[in-house]
Image (cartoon, rainbow, N blue to C red; front, side, top):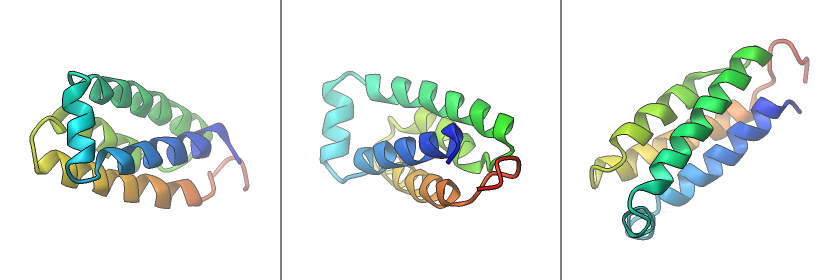
Length: 100
C-alpha cells in the first residue's frame, strides 16, 4: 500500500470525525478553526503524494475546498462527510503506478 493511499485513509477518518454533528463543530470552534488549517495542509500533502503515485486526486481536491469553506455551519458538516466518503473510497482503489 502506497503512502498516498495511507494518507487518504488518515485524512478520510479525520474528515469523518470532523463531520460528526455538533461534536465536530464544537471541536473546530473550540480550537479556533485550527483543525481546518491542519486538514488543509494534510490534503495538500495527500494531493502531492497521490499525483506522484498516479492515484485518484478527487478526494484531496474536495478536501482542500472543504477546509476552505468548513467554517460555515451545516455546509461544513456536509462537506466533511462527503470528503470523508470520497477519500475512503479512493483510498481503497489501487494507484496506477504501484500495482496494488
